[in-house]
Length: 295
Image (cartoon, rainbow, N blue to C red):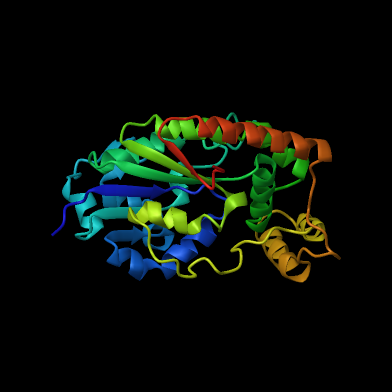
């Protein structure tokens, strides 16, 4: 049986094409297994705390459990040299505490990843992270909140999750500083799916043939302005969840039903400028590789 040599942790982020990418990995599971990868997707790891139990750790205590042993990650690898875990919930909640404005995106990411790395017993990990324009990220999170039956008015939502607090370079710095992270591989949603096969090569440790694993529609379509209005007309909870889902189908984004765009042109421009600065900072970081980088 081959010993576990490397780990790949694909941690999302949420709302950055992650479900679409995971669907592609599912299509390519047999090829990845043949390349020496034991692949775990959310359907293999949920509900929580299944992943934590598999690795013998506790996210609550941040430590290994008493029953941890080096045999646990080896068992997950099933005799393969590479263990691949794709689970965006590893980063924890997007904004932390529900009350008050978010201080930084994914405030629990570093301690949760540190716990997971502890369970891996020192095997070096490559972490994969996808990002997107902060304003569009918050807008997508808002749509998802409505589809979950929550959300409320946009202004209240964005007050709790300010666009300017979404700083991907800050998140990357926290991840790459963790002991056990060999490298952080980043890509922008704006460069996806063109970079998908390059991401697969990072997972497999070598280039693979380029099958059409990623030639499928987006997993989650955003809401039109009319669909948002229909969702907000329903009471919060199960009725709003049903209304949002029905409105997304009945009032899809189109020329007739323009997308929900609550940010002013000035706010959109400010978000784009902040995003460009964050990407420039990422590009200067040691042990950070960005796929799709020009030149």
